[in-house]
Length: 341
Ligand code: DAH
Image 1 (cartoon, rainbow, N blue to C red):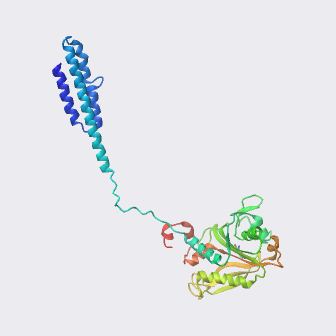
Image 2: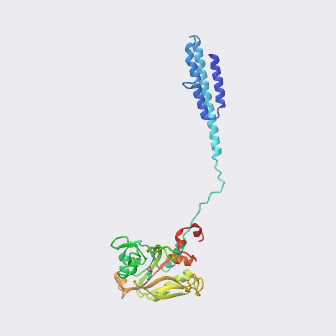
Image 3: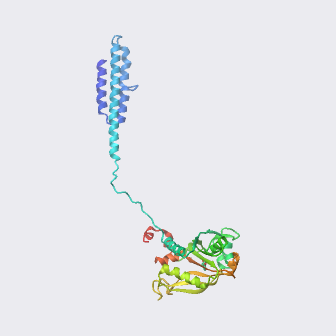
């Protein structure tokens, strides 16, 4: 039995020293010291020994067990140290490697054009206002003096949100004129930009959602000369000092008189080219003197106060400003396009 114990000790110590992984070490522990292990099996045979032999054998068996346990523990420490070193090596961070720069975006060209506009108006003493895209028909049409049968009121033109046609997605930013006068009274100088909605098919110059900038000035003694002077100044700040403008008579329900403002084509200088569709002029905005009925509807006496208003499409402004040929590019958010600005 002594020889057997020695054999177990020797074999076990060799295997333990050779173990290279924790799992292997654990199975060695089971193999020798486990309930069904070799040492345990041998101890079960102690009963066969003579009473004189038993104590010495028992002591030796305990020594072997303690020896093996110690050897396993030591080897486990060696293995876990090795594992730690391997992991540290694997996970080393080289702090000197240059970082990955996150791709940085920038302002959309249309919003750059809008910011430029706002800046110009702020410098002229205008306030910038915000208003709702979900609007009452009353503000979008009626109080802007649009007759009951005005074509833009049609369900085929405007997105109504209620069966009774009382609430809609605003089709223009002009209701902000009413909100400004109603909310702040006179005198007033404001611009307001935002989304408007119309039932238009998408093509190179149309979209069911687009942006407008609205402007309104009401004070004592405001005349058409103020309208022309202000708009000429703004247009020249945007398109250059040598830009030629043209004020053409037009009709809008909420202004009287009304006009449309064109600029001489920046591409051909007025000769006629594809950009201006051979006209030599490019339409920029609608404007006019605020209709007395509109003023009166907001509690302002048209005998005492007068004003002018204007509205323009922001997409078209950006197309002209940055020489973009198709409005769809504004909305598609193709990085290759946007990166050019
Ligand atoms: N709201 C008009 C449109 O959408 C544009 C416009 C014209 C606005 C004349 C104005 C204005 O303030 O005076 O076509």
